Image (cartoon, rainbow, N blue to C red; front, side, top):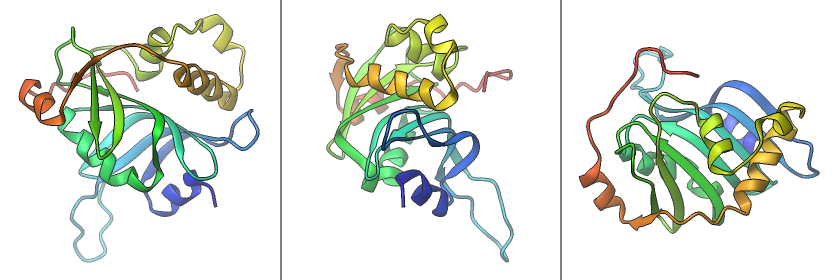
Length: 188
């Protein structure tokens, strides 16, 4: 069973735009939403999650998530990402988290639970477009690829990413974060 299948079985992945094998042998991708905190259930009533990461992009092999990009409303949700994905994260993976409440001029590297995260602001753009820019990928080259191959291209560029972001602790990030901003017409 793949990591994606396990996460789907655990009901942590929602609203898939893509879920399946990518173009590279032995790799799997997902684009959609990730449940970070379930809502309380009453009498077997199904409720939407209390907290989610959206615009999620996962690239996995058979055992671990090797690349992730996602948006969370608050940097505080980074702790929930680690909690939700801990068995599948790898110290050598590349994880990009765009938080809606950090200063637009800041970029951080935060280690949490032995896992490094590149934390960036996201104002009105999309995770996908910001990743393409951050990783210096040409939109024209990516556009010609299939859905799985697009995830391969981004994940492979991320694997070679050597950008230097300011190292801070999670506690320092929490102290520096601003109020949660939720734009009315945020792209999906």
